[in-house]
Amino acid sequence: MKPVWIVDDDQSIRWVLEKALQRENMPYRSFTNPQDVLDAFDNKEEPQVLISDIRMPRGNGIDLLQQVKAEHPHVPVIIMTAYSDLDSAVSSFQGGAFEYITKPFDIAKSIELIRRAVDESLRLQNQTQEGAVRMQETTEILGQAPAMQDVFRVIGRLSQSNVTVLITGESGTGKELVARALHKHSPRAGGPFIALNTAAIPKDLLESELFGHERGAFTGAQTMRRGRFEQAEGGTLFLDEIGDMPFDLQTRLLRVLSDGHFYRVGGHDSLKSNVRVIAATHQNLEARVAEGLFREDLFHRLNVIRLRLPSLRERKEDIPLLARHFMQTSAKSLSMEPKRLSDDALLAIAQLPFPGNVRQLENLCHWLTVMAPAQVIGAQDLPPDAIEIGADLPEGVATEILAKIKTSSPADWESGLALLAKQLLQDGSRDVFNILETKFEKAVLTAALEVTRGRRVEAAERLGIGRNTITRKLQELGIDT
Image (cartoon, rainbow, N blue to C red; front, side, top):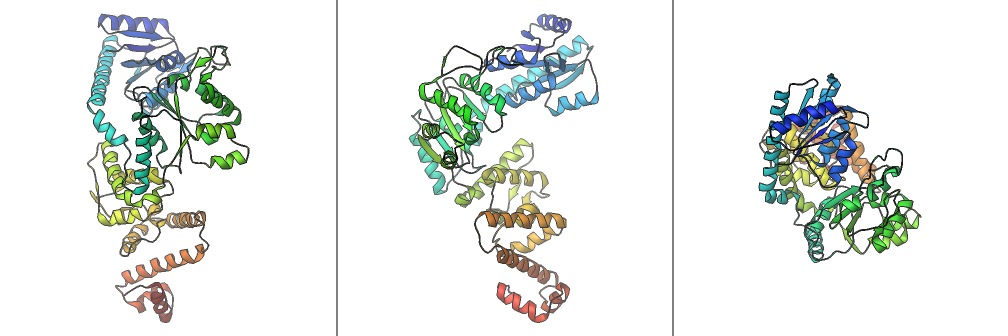
């Protein structure tokens, strides 16, 4: 088994745990601060179990817990502290801690807890190995639409290439998934795949995150740290949202792409990089070049092969396939029995605009897995905000939708209407008011006739309009009664 890592600035605590683990013939390694632990992870080392104090002079155990669980979710983390307060306990468990113990602690009970954590770690490790094929199925890209078949063909043609690729497409179209597929089906598949969202890292930290830093390079740089280029050595580095990279850092990236050399922050020795770079953006890089926000020479370096991902609106025929897949994966992640989407639900979902693309569809399926009351999901079970932004819903679905909307608040309805208006405006429609007015009138008249069982006179009275008006409106809107 791998060693148990102990993180505590108190030498006596480390000594007690070390002796206890030694008696149990369990390998161990000790650290005095969280930063050294993160550096060990960066060097591809990993524990079977991590035991960490909360309050230390050079770091915080809760922050360490969150970073470890984000990047190494299968490593059980046991939090220990001399300060037993509610906030610490809640923060520990919310961060994914395996267990939370207070000092002073019983050695025998602590060893028993460590053994349980080791067993859990080994179980997860075996599950990962045995389920490798199943995991591949969930990480592969799904799609039967012609637009996606074009994407598959490009990935196939690039399968024996190390060429730089620029992936473009709207947010939520699956750019990182495609990058992983390019890596998996490349000669570098045996190497690491390292992803970095350049828009998510503060500008002051991004250079260090990319290229690493030497000890003492800046305040807080207590140890040398390897950057993402070094971590991706022999593999693939995926730079997401490349269009948001600060201009001065673009120069350094260009240098690496040009000759394969770079320096750590504060370093004087040139390092050679053997990394394939795949970049992605939802922005128009040509426009950013024209605006002086993106280097033209870097753009041409990245734009060797461009792979554009279609929006979900361009591959609507894939929506039922994707929806069923996400219903399965959502149920599995929540340890629930999978729910089934009825034909009318799939029909209604397929009509939604999905400005957030595949990611939004996945979120919708997750919502339905948690919130839908029945095992078979109908159109009436869709969330109001999703229904109300749908365009041109099929006949027969409007009544079911109205039943759902009646259970929501007026604010929900107004929010949905605003979302639809915004979508139409963004799509360049020049007749937004009339489109929305027609949809509103059709929904209200259909609802009134449903409530009055098709009696026009009663429907007109309830709506506060004249008999002639309702007759004319029904004819204009093509509503049969």
